Each structure stands twice: as structure tokens, then as C-alpha cells.
Image 1 (cartoon, rainbow, N blue to C red):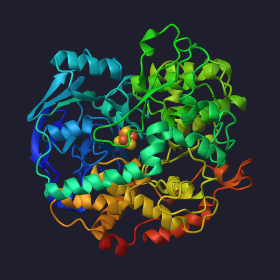
Image 2 (image 1 turned 45 degrees about the horizontal axis):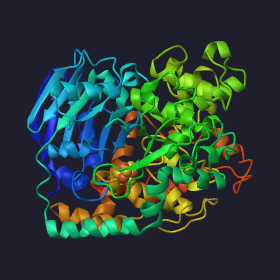
Image 3 (image 1 turned 120 degrees about the vertical axis):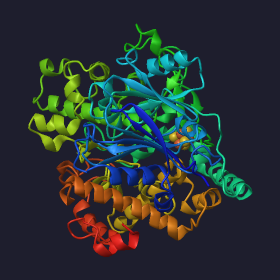
Image 4 (image 1 turned 90 degrees about the vertical axis):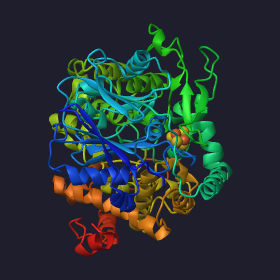
Amino acid sequence: MGWNRKVLRVNLTAGTCTPEPLNMSWANDYLGSRGLASKYLVEEIDPKVDALSPDNKMIMSTGPLTGTMASTGGRYTVVTKSPLTGAIACSNSGGYFGAEMKFAGWDMIIFEGKSPKPVYLYLENDNAELRDAAHLWGKTCWETEEGIKATHQDPLIRISSIGGAGENGVLYAAIVNDLHRAAGRSGVGTVMGSKNLKAVAIRGTQGVSGIKDFPAFLAAANAGKKVLADNAVTGQGLPKYGTQVLMNVINEMGALPTRNHRDVQFEEAGRISGEAMHEKRPTDGKTHLVTNAACFGCTIACGRISRIDETHFSVKNSPKYWGASGGLEYEAAWALGAANGVGDLEALQYANLLCNEHGMDPISFGATVGAAMELYDLGILSKEQIGVDAQFGSAEALCKLVEMTAHGEGFGKELGMGSGRLCAKYGRPELSMSVKNQEFPAYDSRGIQGMGLAYATSNRGACHLRGYTVASEVLGIPVKTDPLVTEGKADLVKAFQDATGVFDAAGICIFTSFAWTLADVQPQIQAACEGDWSMDKLNLVGERIWNMERQFNLAAGLTAKDDDLPPRLKTEPAKTGPAKGLVNGLDKMKPEYYKVRGWSAEGVPEKATLERLGL
Ligand code: SF4
């Protein structure tokens, strides 16, 4: 049946942990993970609630394929209202934590209220208890993992935790699991910190039972794995170079946002690319990359495990960073690198390590540094205000600023607000490269037009994991479309957004979609879950999830005006590359998109659309 049919409700105010049955009617309509947890959130909180008040809830959820033999079936999501965007947040992570929740017998954990003192949830199969976390408060995510495993004398416990960023109200704090996997975006870690919840520690020994038709599931899962293995991206490019395979490709296309999107190509992209991670360093003769790594059940293994150069200025006096650790992935390498004009691979890895250690989203952090560097370049911020000479390209500034933000010191507190609030504070809100206050990821929408529409309309603010039209516009997956035109992008974005909802709800990694379409996932869901999971139904589920999230955002007070891009992308043409002379054509695409969605000109779902989707 895919689901365990069990939800754990944790009331942090009362200190209680109560099991309840999963609402199977909702599971039938929303499948799991992102879809099902969002349904619970929408039903249980006021959309206008202050995201950091006890009245907000935070839901950790698996999907029906989480913990199964489906490739990449180890994902879990964190759903809440975001303090960064004011919109619904759903942040997704791999590693092993999600599968462990399933093995302990649970589909979902709902956290409500606020604990009067720091606690962590310890969950061992059916046994759930809140434990004192006073001794862990102030510790990093890495120290917290180590501490909890030592307390319980069990190295196999899987842990999700927050670091100082989540405790100190950095608005893009992440929840880190398995040391370097994170539910990274939209400040889900900030919400966790506001609830005085330091960590969730899970040990599950029950496996996953109840797959509806196991022989059929095995056949479908194996067929899916073969498709991944035979595909050039998922079978070769991602295992060898990780997501960093994209750095040179996107730069060549003239779509690599550089120096806070002033430029679209980075002259030092090659130095921070996946290829560079394979090259021997002149300093110590070692490659940056040590090996690749996989999340639970993944046959792609895009993860990077790297070792920083011990002689680099950032770590030469800090041996604790010398060991092999997670990173760099493309988005982090871009945000910490090109977005700031920094071409020092070791500095990027150091900043990335601190983001993992202290629980911060490297995309929002790096892009916020990019905005601060532009404010500095324009003379709006001084060296005295920032505390460092923050020129574009300064690796020293990047390393200093990541330390200040992680520790909540000086100007780091302002960086912790995110670029939207930072730029507004200094009178230049248009310099924040964000949508709904969430910073862009690593694609400039002047060179990849569809991404502009995907960013602007994303329900969780600017994001590449809600409608990754890069797959089509750059890589030709599943069909090649011209990245420089706006025609057809409304349909393309809708199709990607809806399909992504299903991948997320199933509990698998969206990177499978470099090779899989929904037709590859459907037989796996059908064989695992009771009921009808035809392609028609799955398409409807994806669209339903999207519209439900939209309804929440509208009720929270967001409007069509929030579906917009910063003026730079709509008025300042790309200076170089294939997109030279182009701006993003959002104003043309957006009305078409609303129409394709069955929404009014104001971006509100029409009655007929809601009825068709059962909303
Ligand atoms: S493709 Fe990469 S991110 Fe996705 S599950 Fe596999 S290792 Fe994890």
C-alpha cells in the first residue's frame, strides 16, 4: 500500500506525542510527502498566521515510495509556512532520514505549538518521546548528530537538526540531516528553531511492508533503474560530475548569473566547475573531489564528497574542516561563487561547509552576499558597516561573511534577513535578485526564458525545483525547446510544475526527471499503492497540489503582483553570450500562463478549475 497509514502528532507546548491514522482519503487525492503534508497544513493553520508563532505548524513527511526499492526513494519533505516568503514552504531532502522515518513505521510527523525549553524528538519505532536538548542548544548540526548518537549509544540513528542559524532566526535556516543533506530552502529551519525543537532523531527497524503488488513493483522499479543507467545525464554526467556538470554548460549558454545578475557569464566558471573538482591542485597534488555519494536507494549518486585544501587561508588553522565532507553541488557553487564573482573553489567549499555545519541555505546566503557586494560597490554600504572589504570577487570577504552570518555576529545578522529585506533596508529593493523574497537559484532567465516564468510563479518563491524547464530548454528533456523564446513556455512551465508535484509527492528525487517522465514513475506508484494511479489521475494530482498551494498563498495575502521578477531581468539586456540583448519576457508569458492554468487575469483559480480539481 506504500503508506504506513500512521501520523505522529507532536504537541510541543504540551509535550505530548500522539499517534493517529493517516487520512487515506487525502492520501488518495494528494499521494504523499509534499502533496499530502501540504493538505494537512492547509487544513490545520490559518494562512495569515505569523510563520514564527506557535500557531504555525511544521510537518515532516515521506511519500509512498520513500524507503522502498524505487531508485532515489529516500526523500522526505518539510512543509510549513515560510518566514522568508510568507508563502507555503516545502523543502525536500535526501540522505537517509526519510527512509528511517518510514522504517520506524510513520508516514508523517506533525509538530505544533512551541516547547517551553529546547527539546529533541526521539523516535524509535513506536516509542516517541521529547527529550531535553538544553545541552545541544548552541551546538552545530554536526555536533548535534554526534551528541545524540553518543547519548543513545547508537550510530545508526538518523538525525535532522538545526544549527545556530535556525536558533538565531536567520530567515533562510535549513534543517540538516546526515551531516550534509538539507531541507534547505524557505527557512524551514527557522520555523523549527522558533519551536525550540533542536532535532528529530529516528531509529526504525521495521522495514517497509505492504507494497501492494511486490513482483510488479520490483519489475517497475528495475525498469526505472535501467532507464536511469542508460541515460547520458543520470547514468554518466551526474555520477561523474554531480550537478556541477552544469557549471560550464550554463555559462556557455550565457545563463550563469554573475555578480548579482549584472552579468550572465562568469569568466572564472571553469575554475569552480565539476571538471575543476577532478583536477589535481598545484598546492598539494590532490583532487578536490574524493568520491561521489548516493542518498538512500539512489542509483544515480550525484552527491559530491570533497576534501578542502588544508593550506587554504580559510582552514589552515582549523583542522576540523580538513576531512572529506559534502559538496560542492552546482547550486551552492554558483551562489557562493559566480553570484559574488568568487572563483576560488576552496573558499566556496569552506563557505559550503559552514552552511552545512550551522544549517543555512547556501543559495539564499550566497545570493544575499551578492546583493551586499553590489550595495558596497555602489557605495551604499561601507567597509565599516560590513566589517570587511566586500568587493565582488573577494574570497576573503565571502569566508568572513559566512562566519559572521553563521555566528550571528555584526553585519552577519543583516545578511541573515535575506537579500529582499537587506536591500529594502538600504533603499534599493530592486537589487534583491529574488521572487517573494526568496533568492534565485543558478539560472539567468534572460538566457533561459521559461525559467523566468517558473521563478515568478513558483509557490515557494524563486526556485529551480518547482518547474525545471532547464531540462527542456537546455538539455532537450523530454523535448528540446528554444531557451531564447517565450512562445510555448506557459504550457511548458505548467507541465513541469504539475509533474514535479507528483515526483515530490511520491518520495523520489526530482533529478530522476533528467531521464524519467511521469510514465516511468506511474507503474512504480501503481504497483506500490492501492487504488487507481493512472497517468490521468497523476496529472490531476500534480495540478491539484499546485492549485492548493496557490490557494494557500492567496489566502495568506499574496497576489499576482508577487508573481514578478526584479526589474533588472526585465529591463537590463544580457551583455554577452547567446542571449545578448535579451531581457526576460515575463510580461508576455504571465497572462498566457494564467490562462493555461485556468486562472483569472488576477491569478486566481477560476471556479471551474477548482471544481475540476476537487478543491
Ligand atoms: S540523484 Fe543525487 S540528490 Fe537525488 S537522490 Fe540521488 S544522490 Fe541524492
